[in-house]
Length: 477
Image (cartoon, rainbow, N blue to C red; front, side, top):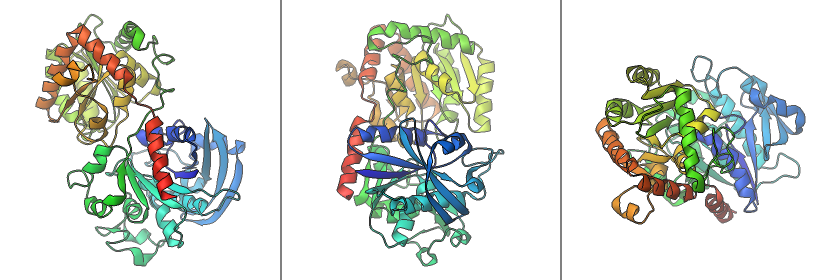
């Protein structure tokens, strides 16, 4: 079976978040269940070195924003169909924002072009290649099913995966013409959303199937609390909606052979994990003699992630003898807040503003627990990395966090099934309570090690989810 994926980022080539990790890992997992997945991806500057290695397989002269060509190349085991359109993608700054952190003003054209190119490839623009399913990811690729339907095509069938419904691709109606969209489709039962064009709503209306990245999130987005205004559209299409849990690349994230660690280890050699704690403390200037647990945050620093509440809980965390290491970037006030916390509690709190992939691996291996107090979380990957590394996740009961972590309640502890700590109250008081539970559990080395081993046994790879996607593809075909 042939599946054409369309996405705006793909690890390890270009990444801003979990979307890239999923798009980068899923093709290999699908290949193990006899699905060939190729990925349409913009040719951003980091991908320029791949262009001479590839072959031009299609050219389009009338995309939104101008012309572009498709260059096919295989790299890191993934077949990429790179949309080479320098006028849209050859620029400094981020994938979606300029050097000042502002959205590119032509994002509608950039990702309209990506969507149109994906739709045309799906309709056979590359000689000898006809996908069975068009699988698009998030708002940046969401017009592809719309262009497919505009062409009067019901084949190939289409699927949208929502990674975060908060990001919807909304633009004023004046962009319709430049995107070559039908103006008579601009109404509440079509592309219109509160007076704007919504890329994501277009795919919700015109895709044959809708998935999101965890079963709990699939239920949550049907409600006003989590649906971000699109809950009514999703309720109308509830029969086409399902949740497929994300996985992680268990080769890239494997404490037994991770070159970013000070010491490798596995479930049978857990004592070696302590060497990473020593290394992380030394790197961050944390007190090496502290007897309490070392907790970490590896995250975008935003209120959505509940990190404002965690910041308010820092005094209690320190009072209980725990240490905290923070890695990430985000809202300036939170960045400064965690910097100030590190200054207020030297040796107990450390903050590294920025992102470093190798350092994130050491954070996972060197910490005893990872804090993820998100107010909403479609799936989340850092808790899966934590499970893999025996670093117990402390998570809010939402989305994929609720689907992947088994709370250390009495029944789960007695069954030796607990893999972390789950709580519901994302406030400073709620976080303080779960920290109390964690610190008490850490004081029992036998219990803690039992939980670590249960966490490391928990399946976090792509095998079952790849099969679930294959089943959905087969239903569509």
